[in-house]
Image 1 (cartoon, rainbow, N blue to C red):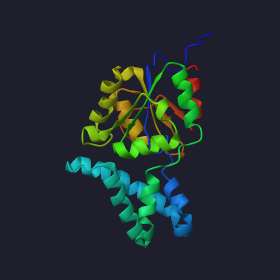
Image 2: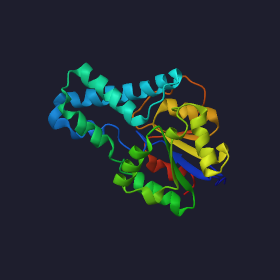
Image 3: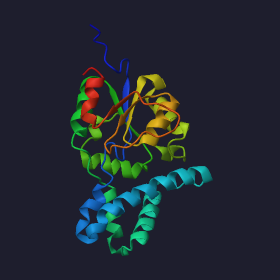
Image 4: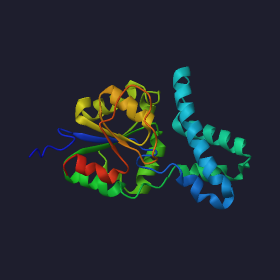
Length: 228
């Protein structure tokens, strides 16, 4: 009987941050008292414009950090939905310390105990990632936190994924990359990572180059793929 794990010879598990480790809808949800029935639509539109601006700015060669992009996306969403500016500061503050998904801490702890390196590779600005990691209490469970701010271009540019290869000192084929974002999954797989799609939101796969090896609904399913 073959007992080889689905993902073998993995030296590091690298995670996208927003939507994968941290709940991007948490800020709007915590302002439901101010936003009412617009909380849900705001969360969706805010995230959509935030991502669109990263791609468009990369194409335009007009990089600004993710906090600026996040604020710009929020301003667009609030204007579109007719939401007054009083709640903006609270939303931006909450975005700095988004809630982590419930399984995150246990999964990272298990990986560390098994001797597998762990890291974040994110569009997030360093200060944003530091705040979110500390708020989640996972700072001691990560070997590295890598931000696109170091190179001034956003995912899915190949230079972003190269940051993990260089930072961890591992070949791309020994890095298992997790993201909940289908476009990020495609980009990482096309680069050469071993990719697991954490399809939390029941998305369709993207019609893009790069195929993931496995699809799971939460990170709680990851250890079994690694034979842990």
